[in-house]
Image 1 (spheres, one colour):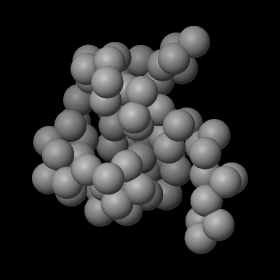
Image 2 (cartoon, one colour; image 1 turned 180 degrees about the vertical axis):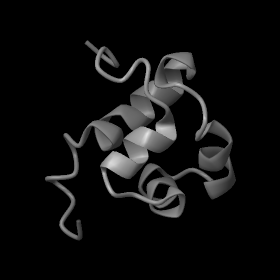
Image 3 (cartoon, rainbow, N blue to C red; image 1 turned 45 degrees about the horizontal axis):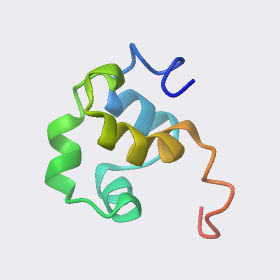
Image 4 (cartoon, rainbow, N blue to C red; image 1 turned 30 degrees about the vertical axis):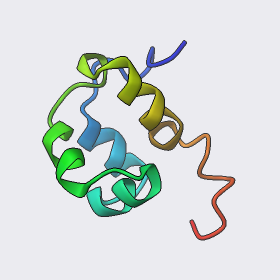
Length: 70
């Protein structure tokens, strides 16, 4: 079920829906901001599988309940 609802949306759309900037997402996922900005215009379905697994919990909002500062 990984990515069924997200497959045609861009990373930027999903990130904005969660209220995250590229810098905030990069800090949470422990990636460079430049890497997030590179993939911003890509559709979720076109991401490599390893990156999908890393970003999915944060872009879907399932993990945001566990983060105390959000």
